[in-house]
Length: 207
Image (cartoon, rainbow, N blue to C red; front, side, top):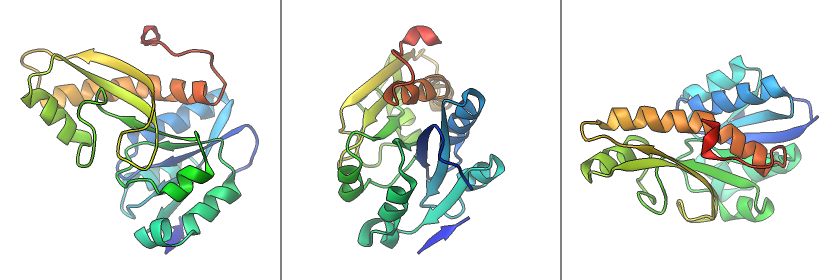
């Protein structure tokens, strides 16, 4: 079952999938609302209680909730995506593995942000605080973000962009999380622009 929780089709079209609070989604929506080079037309979530749905509605972006059946067993979500004609599909804190049928229909158009420097700290179960706790536990001296293409395996698609942050000896997982979030807020919208052909290059000098 899919619940529709309104959008014109000018400019480049972005669709976001998210499972939680939606801070990255909110940042991306606002970034493009200010620049008017592209627009987030829909936000999809597999979590009916996810704060991202309320944030999308507050920013006048169409918000939709879907369940496992409509995502994996039927073509309901796929058909809505086909009708929406996105130029890019952005996974921003989305915790389910993406179906191959959607990836195949939108080749090279699905990207994800991961809160670590892949291939380290990737794979099933490696998300959010689980990543930061593992990084601190293993006494890493740096971490960062990886923005990558999505395939049918967790965190294994081609790397598009990485940015790093140093980890100090007394940093906690919360400290690392704050630094990673700042990297996400700074770079994720810029990399989306790059993938959409709206920007020539993205480098860490943008910070």
